Length: 184
Image 1: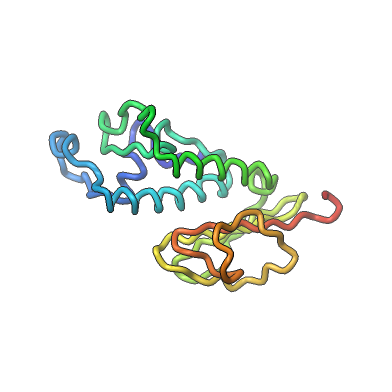
Image 2: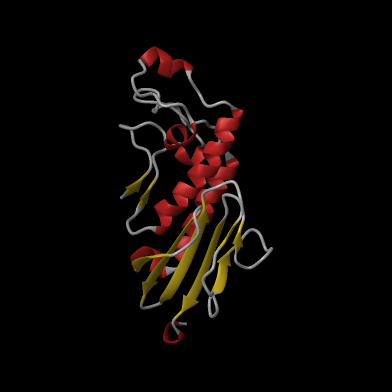
């Protein structure tokens, strides 16, 4: 299972964007939360991490509330109540999108994994099985990066920005798919 947070760990968004709680007592942990800028940055990094969670081999396993933007340090601060009515809609929609992308490409569930060369700031991976290939490109930085591989023969499965074909925007994601001709 691919987990980013569990009931035994700090919330992923807190680890990604907050201050370290190493050596801090429960009193400190109970009074420290992400400020607005940290939270926004944490959302972007969490989305990149969740993309990896869904596209790497294994099953994505989401600890309740991560999809809603819950934050928290070590137990018991990572076990807050689900924020009914105050969920982070951007994260929930993104998790739904990742699930749809994974379902649209059988290779993302069962395919062999190959990491592709890419410039610093990008993680590019290919999953391949008998149905075809899927390439996912994840930008985990706040600046655009170019992806230099030839995507001829691939169809775009997801791409929010439609600027230059191989430019991945800040904290962006692009997914391309090529189906084997005999499995269409």
